[in-house]
Image (tube, rainbow, N blue to C red; front, side, top):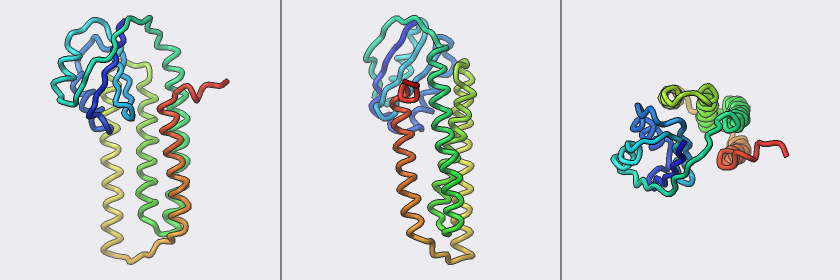
Amino acid sequence: MIKSTYTITKMDCPSEERLIRMKLEGISAIQDLQFNIPERKLIVVHTESSEIESKLKSLGLGSELKEQILIDWKSASSNDVQTKLLWVVLLINFGFFLIEIIAGLISGSMGLVADSLDMLADAFVYGLSLWAVGSMIQRKRKVAAWSGYLQLLLALVGLTEVVRRFITQDIVPDYQTMIYVSVFALLDNAICLYLLQNPKATKPR
C-alpha cells in the first residue's frame, strides 16, 4: 500500500474538502483519505494509481506531492483511534448544543441559538463520520454529501428564525448571558480543534 502526502495550499475550509472528495470519486485504488485542513495537508492511502495527482492538480487548489512511502496498512488500529476521537468531539458538541440552545432561548439571544444549531450540525457530521469509519471510500463520499445537506438545513432553520424575529418581535437579549456562554463556546471549539489536530490525545496514558 502507498501513503501519499499532499499539501493543498488553498484548502482552508470543508468546502475544499468536499470538492476533493468528489473529484477523487470513482478511483477504486483509494483506500483512505485523511484531511488536515488547518495544516492544508491531505494523506491518501492507495494502491498504484496515476490518476490521483492529475485529478488534484486539475482542481487548481495548489496541490503538491510532498511525500510518498510504502506502508503496511493496518486500518483496524487507525479506525479505533478515529472512532474514539469522533465520539469525544461528538459528545462535546452535542452537550454544548444543549447548553447554548437553552441559554439562547432563556436570554432571547438568536446568536446563541444560531451557534447552538452549528454545534448540532457538527455533532451530526461527527455521527455520520462514525458510520463511515473503516468503510469503503464510496460510503465516505456519501457521508460528506449528507453532512453538507445537514449544514444547509440547519442554516435555513436559523435564517427562518432570524426573519421571524425581525418581523414579529423586538427582543433585547441578555448580553451578559451571551458573553459568558460565548466564552465557553470558544473554549469548546478550541478543545475540539486541539483533539482533531492531535488524535493521540484521546489515547489513555
